[in-house]
Image (cartoon, rainbow, N blue to C red; front, side):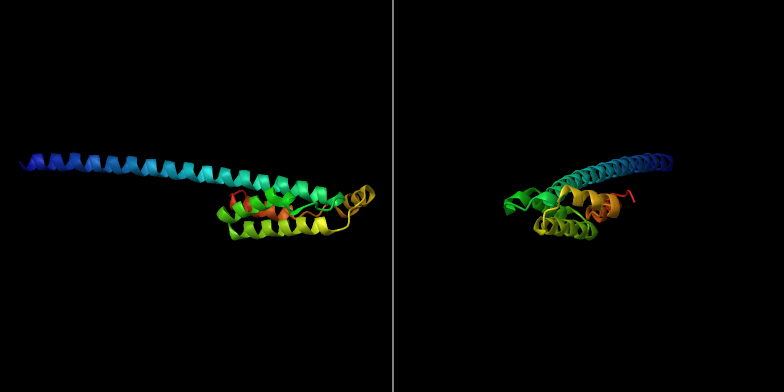
Amino acid sequence: MEQSIISAAAALSGSLVGGISTFAASWARHRTQTSIQQAARREELYAEFINEASRHLVSAWGNQIKSPESLINIYAALERIRLISSAAVVSAAERVMQEVVSAYNAPNKTYDELLRIVMNDGISTPLTDFTQACRTELGGG
């Protein structure tokens, strides 16, 4: 009888270990997939914000803002960034937004002024800090 108890205990412990291993592997796989999906959503949001900010910064070189409604998309992206991103990314995005508003308030630039800035001074963009913060958050360094 002692032999049958040992056999049953061995079978039970083997099943338990197998079940726990399967559960752990499934949990780890699910967690990894969720993490990858979240990173992809953040990357998509950051790309949207970069596109909107770039469009507004270039537009501001030769135009004054016509109405605050034209900033809706970039503002909405900034608010979504606040929901899911680190403090470093949010802070960099806020600086970009401030730069966009400041650019619209600055005097318009002529093509010759833009050419001089690009050729002599280089383009200084507030998006550089934002993209670096995003890259760090997404694990790309």
